[in-house]
Structures are given as structure tokens and as C-alpha cells.
Length: 312
Image (cartoon, rainbow, N blue to C red):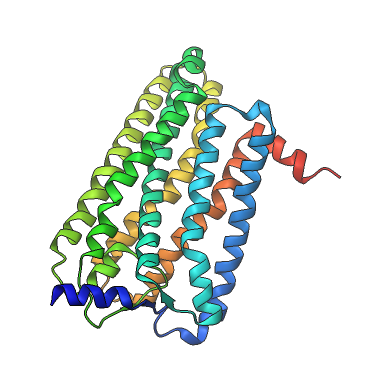
């Protein structure tokens, strides 16, 4: 029977419901979604273009900013185009393989982004605490290697999610009450045993993001200790100003994750459509604001962006 159910699930598409109960407002909801997505693409591609064109920006810090931009583009592009198809054309069907692919990219890119933010914290630590050795400790090749390690780590830990979902029976339930596929949302519509999925979805974020956050906290602890050993207030301000952009991006990336996780577990009195909108705004707002933050807070990047955007 399990084999028959599995076969049946692969012959039928999943149905993404969008935002149940708000179907009449789908077109209006699509306006901020599409606007944020367009701004996100323009901003992140502009950052990638400027860093690629300007040889003076071929440095570890800007390589990390490019990695962050790539994760932002990939994450939002994994979700938003399909969501807009639902809002505009009522195209709710998604193939089983397409759903599992969306889950893989959405979760793996999120953990790659966490690894990039952790590497950025290490970059700021070396820049402030060991400025004379910065060029020897952090080379472009070493940053690229760290990015590759973060990518491999994410792929290895996330790959079991779609693989285990593909082995679950789905019987006659193929309706996902959301606008994109997520690991536990798909697992919960299965008629099989999802104990492993529940455990895995709790343990992996704790292990990966938890370890990244511990290393980020360690880096900033060492930065604060080094800064307060300097007597000059002007040096204090200069040192902390170099970390402002990273701190803002980090808060925007991690805070919604914990907020959404908590509200899902303690969501009494909160409408499901509110949780859905909050979850998708998390995939839209940081990618839109990250290039703006780095464009404003990083003087060298700001000047190069102005060279291309403000010239006559």
C-alpha cells in the first residue's frame, strides 16, 4: 500500500493554496511582493556588477558581499516567481519534483547565507584585531574556499530533507496551505510516519545556525575586548562603524527566523495568513535591504556605485 501511495503521489502535482481565506486580495498582495523582488534583483545585481567591474573592489570583504548578494538572489527567486504565478494567474500546481527542488534550494541557501554571515564576522575580527596580518590571513582564495565549505556543508545536511520526503506516502492529500514548499509543510500533509522529519527539522537548524551564531558571538566578543583596550574614542567609533553594516544585515537575517519559529510553535491567537505573510516577507525584505545597507555604510562601495548610477 505504501508503494502504491508513493507511486500515486508522483503521478499527481502538489497544489499550493497561496494564502487561504485571502484569495480575493491576492492581486493586491502581489504588489509589494513584486516590487520588493524587483528592487532586490536590481540592487543585488548592481552590487555584483560593480564589484566585478572595479578591480579595486576585488578584496575579501567585497567577495563576501557578492556571496551574500548571490544567496539573496537565489533565495527570493526560489519562492517569489511561483508565488506571483499563484497571485496573478491562479497557477497553483507544482510538480512533486519541483516542490522537492524548491525545498532543497530554499533551505540550503539559507544555511549558506548563515555561513557567509559567520565568515563576515571573522573578516571583521581580523580587520580590527589583526589589521597588519589581514592581507595574509584573509586572501581571496581563502574566502572562496570558506564559501565552498559553507556550500558543501549546507548541501550535505539539507539533501536528506527532500530525499526522505520522496519516500513518504501522500495518499489523496496534495494540498499545501502555503505559497511555496517547505520541508515540514510537505511532511505534515503526508499520511506516513514523519517522526524523523520533525526531529531533523529541529536539530539541523540548531546545529548549523547555532554553531554559526556561537562563532559570530565569539568574533564580536574579541572585537569588543580589543576595541575597549584602545583609549581613543575616535578609534572606538571607527572600529564599530566598520561593523555596523554586518550587524544590521545579521539582525535582519537571524531575528525573523527565530521570531517565525516561535510564533509557529506558540501561535495561539495569530491567524495562519499572518504567519504566511511574515514568512514570505522574511524572504523579501532582507534581500531588498542588504545591498542598500552595504551601499550606504561601505564608503568605497558607495563611491563605485555612484560612479555607475549617478554619472550622466
